[in-house]
Length: 442
Image 1 (cartoon, rainbow, N blue to C red):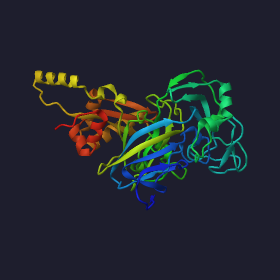
Image 2 (image 1 turned 60 degrees about the vertical axis):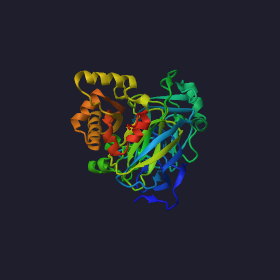
Image 3 (image 1 turned 30 degrees about the vertical axis):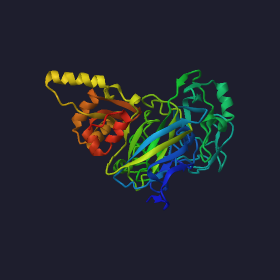
Image 4 (image 1 turned 45 degrees about the vertical axis):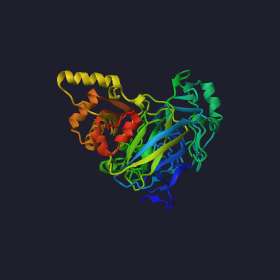
């Protein structure tokens, strides 16, 4: 059962504490924040830092969840991302491989020291490189992960550019990880900069930060990085304490771990409420990523986030709905201009089609063990929530939308133009009109 502090709801809740990799109803919820209030937090990097820190039982380090006043199971909460900015000056990432024997079933969740046998031991950093992480109990090298191909990248947030560096620069950066990673004060992870891996240098890249893990807590405790259908599949019948059935995973997860690059400043994410108070959390900020986290990991950074919450009563969801920024929408789902609408009206009159649908873009997140099943999941969620026939969703996503990869092995975006009366019934029409500058008919 989740614990909500009995205090007066606040206009702004500032979060400075984190969850060490586990989210769910056993956590104390901060706040509550008022419906219409804001949550502000600094977020530690996800993925590699927690991965190389054995005490973590999830692949991320997300913010302590916040209760939303009046949010009940079966509602939804809209999260309007008003600020998402990078504070790290450098990070490191790459393709991973596991060190066999140093985990029970899942190296993200159940790490252990093979020398002394301690489960999820506390640890410390000695020197730099692959052998830098050592068990506090016996002193042995204890990292369960290695880079099969990795890089260090330096960041210029002001000008939104970045650059991978050579081995010499990576080694210098590894000597001062705290100054450049800029982890929040209460973060417990080791900085991945200490490994100093540099297999690619001189590659310049754009920066476009977004949140890889954001939403509401699941209704059972689970590793934060596994709160999705693809990574969550590793929990099914797992040998550690978070093992569960497929049915339990599907019922309890909220798909907060999306790695969807359009979940960024200016977007609106509408999340299911599966525990009283919702429990809004966030983390795993990336400095950049294309459509699909193909390498398994992107550029995880520390950052600052501010968002506004709004309860949508009675909107029961299985997974998130995203109202993307207009400039992030796939071309076929973008609202037409006034000139285009005028041409459509003439076209309709030419053929006797006088009624023209009023609609707006909507994106459903789908997740499953692979991309095909994730696509089906997103399409089925869209049909279940809107009430439109499944085959109509297929047609709309084909001619007035798109299917886009968010992450391998199995998170996708299903976007299409949805009739406005349906959005009215769902209680999100005004959000959509404001997001896309659509007129409210008289």
